[in-house]
Amino acid sequence: MVSHVSASSRGKEPTRPPSRKQQRVPSAASLSRRLRNSEKKRAVILEAALSTFSQYGLHGASIEQIAHLADVSKTNLFYYFNSKEELYVSVLRSLLDLWLKPLRSFTEDRDPLEAIQDYLRVKLEFSRDHPAESRLFCMEVMQGAPLMLTELQQPLHDLVENKIAVIQAWIDQGKLTAIEPYHLIFSLWATTQHYADFRVQVEAVAGKTLDDPEFFKETLNSLETIILNGVSPRKVA
Image (tube, rainbow, N blue to C red):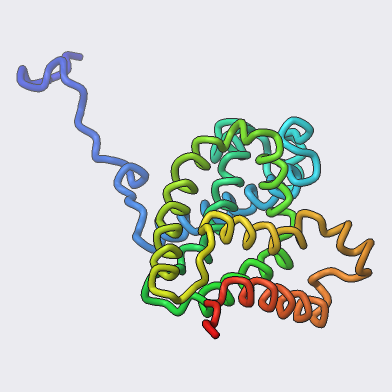
């Protein structure tokens, strides 16, 4: 039997309608849900990494430990982060941003004593609620910040320089006593972070930590008295 095929169609593959799978386009709701799930998974991995790094450090922690704690496979973890070092830097970068947030509230139009008082409260709350984060950052800096030096030399340095100018403006306006602005910032960092970085020592000596509401209130009141009295303008007799 001879097949009757037209010349125009000879040698051509028959055209097939696209499959339903090919035609399916994710809805906006579906894409939004995928994004939320992805962000949630990334947050879980970062939380597990923070816990592991703060306990074992960068070199003592393993990807296997982090993946197990996050309840994901190594393959899934590497979908979000290319290496242990990238994951470590991501953790520290998010901590630095959180740590510096209260300092950003220093603006020239604010009352300086009120701004410093708010800063002390917020940073002390951070030390109470996120001691592991503070200790991890402290550990990185004590080691010479091998993976975070660029972050310290740029975002941190630039922000501090900006706030140094604000503090100096307060001093020039007679709203603060004449002090070196750098040392005010260093003192604010040191006094508030001490309760997180040396939490064990604080508890060994005082028998309490910032988790105790009364001790938190006592600590905040004491720091306010020490620092605010030190920076308040001197009254001329």
